[in-house]
Amino acid sequence: MCGLVTYDLFEIMEEFSDFKNLYNEEEIEALKEVHELIREDVFLDIVYGAKSKMHHQDWLKAVVLSGSFIFHQKHLRAMVIEKAGLDFRPTQEGGQEKDNKISE
Image 1 (cartoon, rainbow, N blue to C red):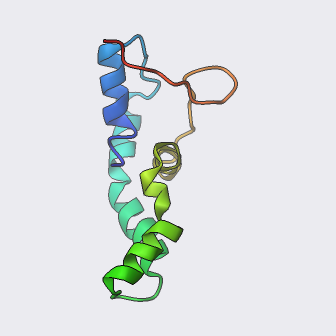
Image 2: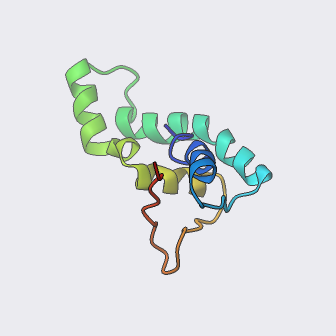
């Protein structure tokens, strides 16, 4: 999911629209390298805390209440970019993400 909301998305948008990828190849590699960090040091710590095991219902509740950022593309994208040590580069002026729609 980390790739889908960052470098994979950027590649698809560049191929099918007038979007220009704002990250160079070295920065894209940095984005790719943070997946395990986010999974191990962020998501699992948030959901499990100090527990090593959790019942299914408790896990679902923890994901919904604490780990739901993985279901929100803007939150996950911001986390991946931050953990990669990069600056967020909005696709339009004003600091807001532009809704780039792929034209048919």
